[in-house]
Length: 281
Image (cartoon, rainbow, N blue to C red; front, side, top):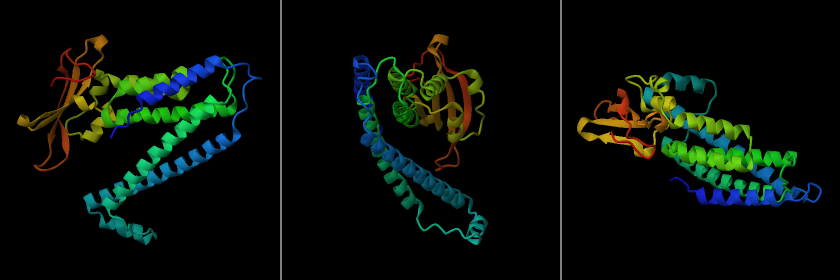
């Protein structure tokens, strides 16, 4: 389920701006809290370790699924010959581990974010003064989490507008952050469809392939045309260029299959009637 962070992020931003504006001279500012910084450092290291473990589990599940789909007994034999342990977990067990670890990572991320805000608020920020190395790292690590929060909105619902809002909020207290600026630029590029990018989609492509090329479609821009056994994904075009939406229509592979492939593409699927909030197909 999409976690709601808009109110919390807004409060954090307000605190940061107030503290920066009210800061005294660099000499009067309080020294950074060393104990708190060490706590942050430890939390970040633990979080990175958990993320690495999660990627390993996802890799194992993907390999297991591919082997099952292809019936590749030869590959299994080669792995055993090289001394690799045969997987003892089932795909369902691996998925359960992935889900549990993902939830744990989300909680650890939120906790780290809170500690970073606490550190930044108590590190003696002074408007116009150069940041200390620790302050710079705190802002950089906060930016990493802001980007991950924004990416959730993109990955789970194709909500580029909300993601861009998060990036811009973070930039208000960390102007010029290269990672945030790059994230904004990418999200702005993917937010509206252009003909050149859309033309890369070809008949027969899978939904994953389309998503890799065009970005995540917004949930409200997916249409099920049951009477035609067709599924439509609609990507809004820039309102300043006339609006509307480009459509990718999928048909289901063999009856009963969960796989869908591109049947038709239409850059002019919706003519000037679409907004980012939804499309008529």
